[in-house]
Image (cartoon, rainbow, N blue to C red; front, top):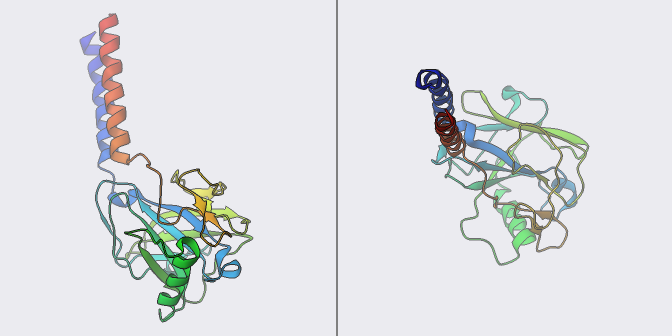
Length: 229
């Protein structure tokens, strides 16, 4: 019986070790997006949130964003943030090409969501330029690294004014869940007009932790089967 268990166990461990060794960029998810915000908020800027679900910081220098045209050639640089720490969520607000509007837009966003009670450690970056404008009738967010490789992406259908799309689950592809107060850290903004969780994200399983959990479960199962025989 020892011999019959050895090969499956080796295969299981090898597969899960490969999962643990996956590129760290796989830990970056688009955790939230608000495509309604450019036309229906006082700060007049669409926004999305990136979250690092891994256990180490990720350098995002040179990373870019595009909408549903899904083209690195027409993508826009993410500015103001060069690294996302482990477990950190970072907000990116749409601004103008030169960045001269960044400060006023970011200030307006903070006031609208938090009033004067701005969370410590809140990090906001920006992007801006022609060709990108998240549509309320449905669109997408595509994130690329500096070499043009697609890191992650989501798409969404028609949005609901005042409610961001909640992707705490880290899905890739179509996202439908809307933010609801009390779910995944979502709350009503200070201005009373929006619901979301910008800069906040509930704990999600890290790929490394998930893989280790599976390894542990596999070993427990193997020991149990061995005892039965």
